[in-house]
Amino acid sequence: MKAIKFKSLSSGSCGNCYFLGIFEESDEGSQCECSVLVDAGVSPRRLKKELQRDGLTLDSIAAILITHDHMDHIRSLGSYCKHLRFPVWLTPELSKVLSRHFLTARQIGGLKRELSEGWNEIVPGRISARYFIVPHDASQTVGYAIRLDGYRFMIMTDAGRMTPEAAGLASAADTVVIESNYDLEMLRGGPYPKVLQDRICGGFGHLSNAECAEAVRDFAHDGLRNVFLCHLSDHNNTPELAFGCTRAVLDPSVRLVPLPRQTPSPLFLL
Image 1 (cartoon, helix red, strand yellow):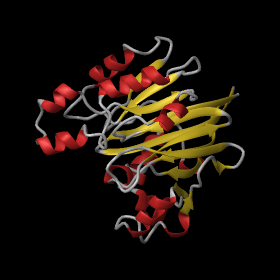
Image 2 (image 1 turned 30 degrees about the vertical axis):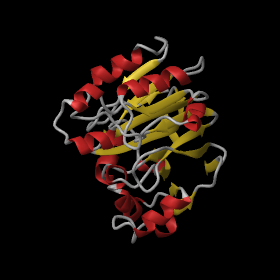
Image 3 (image 1 turned 135 degrees about the vertical axis):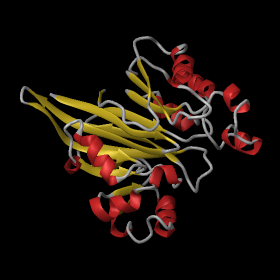
Image 4 (image 1 turned 135 degrees about the horizontal axis):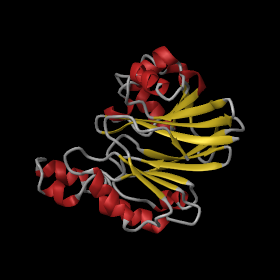
């Protein structure tokens, strides 16, 4: 029997990296047939260690998809390229940026795979992905819709606001990973200077709990099975606040999970 599984290695300004794979389930156990990573914000050593806890190896990983060029998303990409040699899928614009970036310029070389508009075959016949642009103050920021043997997955992290394209893709997904970064009251009453507060909530920073909940309410549909809340702020949010805000607008049959910031999540069966 086929199964789709998902794991967050880290989710927040300390680092971002997500694992998504197709598994074969049998009486003998569970075997990952192929998988992808989204972003490279944890070290190769930590990646290997945390996957091993779930009986996984690096051998199944077919590619990395990159969302944008902020440090918490590409901190270890140069090391991945040098030591792990995964193909790196990214937009033409991000390809140019990372070809010049001090962390990746010397390593990314022939590992780059440029995404075209529409669906791209990452693992032929098994995993395909398409990117969509989201507003965020990086060189370019994208989210991804991913199909794994027909299963529909969507991830959007680091987004200043929801877009019609993102909402449309989410409304057709079985599982959505979406940012729920901050509570506005905590942000305005917290330690950040006003210029940083304004950057966060100015439309090119991050989604608040309320904005996330509004987006989830609008894209929720009968086929939605899981919503994971990602990139929660350590200073301006709590898992309880993020969960409560979205839970109030989401059908109770849909699993809702705030992802931990600095520690790995369980390996979720989607």
